[in-house]
Every structure is written in C-alpha cells, then in structure tokens.
Length: 343
Ligand SMILES: Cc1cc2nc3c(=O)[nH]c(=O)nc-3n(C[C@H](O)[C@H](O)[C@H](O)COP(=O)(O)OP(=O)(O)OC[C@H]3O[C@@H](n4cnc5c(N)ncnc54)[C@H](O)[C@@H]3O)c2cc1C
Picture: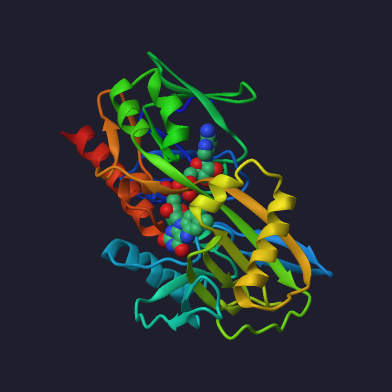
C-alpha cells in the first residue's frame, strides 16, 4: 500500500486520533487510521458479556464525558440529535470508606453525557464525522516500528505487514506506547513523552443475580478504600437489561494487585463492593479488565510535533486527562500540522 503525497497515517483510533482525522479530512488530506484493537474509541469503550441469553454492556473505561469547549459541544449536540449520545442524570453520591460510614449527595449541575447504547458510540460518531470509513480504518494492526525513507513514512505492524508512503505519521497513543515509536526518529519528542506517567486501573464488572437490584444510588465517587468510582451502567439512558455495575479500583489498590489474574481480581472487587454497600450481592456475572494506562499525569503541551519530520503525538496526556482533553489534543495536532504545511 503506497499512499503518496497528501496522506497521513494516524496510529491509534482513540478520541484524539479520530478528532485529528476529522480536521485533516476536512482540509483535504487522505487519512488512514491504524489501531491494534477491533473497536474504535480506545479507552472510551464498551465490553459486552452474554449473561442468561442477554447481551449486557459494561462501560469499563470512561464513564461519561463533559463538554466545555465549543468544538466538543458541537459533537455532543450532533450526537444528542442523532440519538447516539444522551445526557445521564445519575443519583450521584460521594462515599467515604463505606456507605454506612459516610455518604453525601453530589449536587453538581455539570451535564454528563454518555454514548448510547454504550460509550463506544462516541468513537463511532467521531469516525463517521471524520469520514473515516472501513477502507481507511485498519483494525487489529499493532504498529511496532516506523521507518522513514525517500518515499515518506512506512508503518510496520507486529505481523510484519507494511503500509508505506505517508507524508506524516501522527500518533494517538498513551505515552508509554508512543515513546518506543518516537525514539529512533525524534529523541526530543521521546524525551517529553517519557516524562509523562500513567496510573493503572482495574475495572471490575458485576451483574447481580437480581437485575432490578437498587442500592439507592446510581454512581459514587469513593475514597478511603479499594475504589475510586462505582456506577450502575443500567442507570444510563438507552441501556436495557437492568443492573450492570462497573467498579473502578483506585490507583494504589490497582498497583498492589496489578499482575494478579483477572478472575482473582474480579472476585476480590466483588467482595469489596459488598463490604462497601454493606450487603451480600449474589452475582450472575463478574469479570475484570486491567487498564495499564488509565489516567495520565500529563505534560503542559496540547500536542507534540516535529513538523520537518512529519511526526507528531496527541492524546489525553497532552490535552488533559479526560475524553474532551483527548479530543482537544487531536484537533490541536491536526491544526498545527496544517499550519506548518502552509507556512
Ligand atoms: C477506567 C477509566 C475511567 C475513565 N473515566 C473517565 C470519565 O469518566 N470521563 C472522562 O472524560 N474520561 C475518563 N477516562 C479517560 C478517557 O477515557 C481518556 O482520557 C480518553 O479516552 C483518552 O483518549 P485518547 O485518544 O487520548 O487515547 P486512547 O483512548 O488510549 O486511544 C489510544 C488508542 O491507541 C491504540 N493503540 C495503542 N498502541 C497501539 C499500537 N502500537 N498500534 C496501534 N494502535 C495502538 C489503542 O488500542 C487505543 O485505541 C477514563 C479512563 C479510564 C481507563
């Protein structure tokens, strides 16, 4: 595959990469997107589980997003109109230690939005708005090396497959995954990328035997224990099938259990959740997913770019540790690349 002039490869189809793709596509560039996964949207994703003949959806990464900038508000407006996004109004509380020890209502009017029927709807919406169709999305391609020659950039994936001739390569990867790709070509960018660290997060997923289980709250910010956040995905709009709890372990607990098998972690998080709410909750399903790179301690730059090389990076560790931060960073990188090419 030789792309020729005017073509850009984006590695990583997270919110940042898809936002970047839209700006470049609108400016007339041919954009190809590569991702190691099957789905789009990266950490803004949904895990399916089949339980008693029902397909349940767990938003095991990002729980919701806020929209404070006009560009992202425009995306949210479009999604609300199309029905692929909706406003979530959870019964939200803050818990200190256990429910019995201390709980308080979170009175916060900030609109919180979710994808419908799962958070992965945001990635699909962004891809559609970017005009990134199947021909331009290369799924299950983990890019392992970048090469630069007279014909431009070549991407090499873990199976050895090559995609050639890009004028620029723009990475949308957590810093630890971006650094090895930057090192050989742009040591200065690699240095800045290496300065960023990520906290990990074990995400437990729990389907109670009683799908109508109501614990008296839908979501909680938790402190002083194993969790940072717990939420019933069944309380989000556009879900069917009842209770589907997501249990986010806090960074310290996650680090202490990082290399344990997912099954053992799911069992432990289930037990901790029962202790948190002070009652037994028999499970119809429980599982766990480890996010090695969940939340960044980012750098104060909206993106990184070496315009002469045609190599750049975006993501939430540049734009701010949330969905909208990734979106803003992706746009910022694309705009900087376009400005450099017309200067
Ligand atoms: C547990 C958890 C809870 C969160 N809760 C919230 C929340 O409530 N609200 C909020 O706003 N944000 C939340 N976030 C943060 C939010 O999900 C991220 O800020 C945002 O999704 C990051 O987007 P991104 O585009 O920067 O990167 P990512 O979403 O990480 O995208 C990177 C992409 O690169 C791909 N990739 C990686 N390596 C390679 C490779 N070598 N080759 C090809 N592809 C590769 C990955 O598959 C992925 O699709 C949460 C995150 C986690 C993990």
